[in-house]
Length: 249
Length: 249
Image (cartoon, rainbow over all chains, first blue to last red; front, side):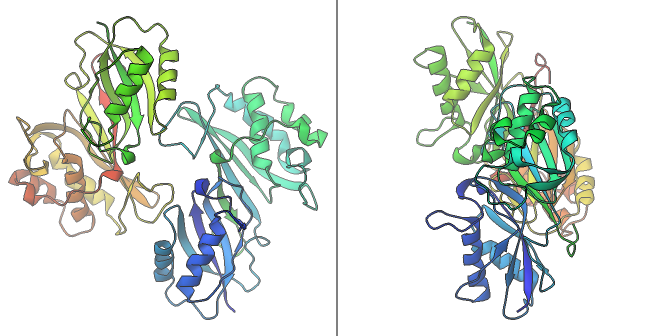
């Protein structure tokens, strides 16, 4: 069976996450339902590029599925999927991929953005974390520098994770100043559960001057989740980038 | 009684517009309710910088109100107002103004933005107009150039308007290209009812190549509403800028 990727985006507010769950709405369930209708199949199974937690958004998320025959008119197919999907999930592209292309295991890099705003904003509710204290963006970026490269990110992983290894190759980790807010931009080959939200929570301690810029390096070194800061809320988190060897970015 | 201005922002999706109306939710009613609580008054009347139609947003909107005594702690006052207001309305600033400062009549310039996107986007629903055809942004900007300066904008005003004069001094009118979309930026001393949405609808005819770049000048000259294009939906429209002689921009 030919395999295709879909690039989608979703506002995660209404969902218990990407992954299908017995009694909660999930993005995966919506996509599988729409694909089954569009393909005229009883049931279609899709595999996502990763889990996302409840309330987390994606401005670019990839999934794969197998289909019986070729999809003759990709534009028409994605247009019809968009009509079948709710307004908070959009399909951007249908991409033919090699038969062994895997949305999760073939990904070579993922990138997240975490958005913070300092004052109430009607256009950011549910899509950014309202955090009132001022933050020293340069200090937070400086504190992240020692984390770049390959390390065990045990301190930034939710306890009880079943990951085989805690090693991640962190390729970018910096803060951007925005009007009345800021954003954390982070890229790595892989991320552990809750890792971005724990990194951000720990950065906030530095940004408020409660810890110096050596703090994140010490927390990393400790390999102990209790050394890191709290996990910040899901609503500010966006998966925004996934790289594959066979897909142009 | 001392007079103050409030700078607010609102997502207009849930409202029948700024103006109080008998049986519909309005931004003004919400603000008056919150101000009455914050000031401990039975009833507070506010005057906005202008009407906005149902579903139109404002990223910066000014209103004035009079209060019995001085407001001692402006920061605390706006914080408490933000707590009293729903999530789709935010207060940015409380500003002392001259006693004859008037939110509507003292304004010397207003600026709107109209946002268009070409593909379904979960993060833009309700805040941008989904218009699929490709648009020639340079041609639309060129078509707007002859409209700059003072003219009677009769052709771009909703019929049945009770405005005494149709003259507006158009100071900026241009299109910006964005990822998968574009935006119209327009500034004038004043705007007639439905004017921005009629300007955008007429620009779209040029942007799609149905009319040449001389079209907007001819429509302006005609002084006839039926010469202009259709009015585009409210959801893409944002009031984003109001200038007063006594307020720093």
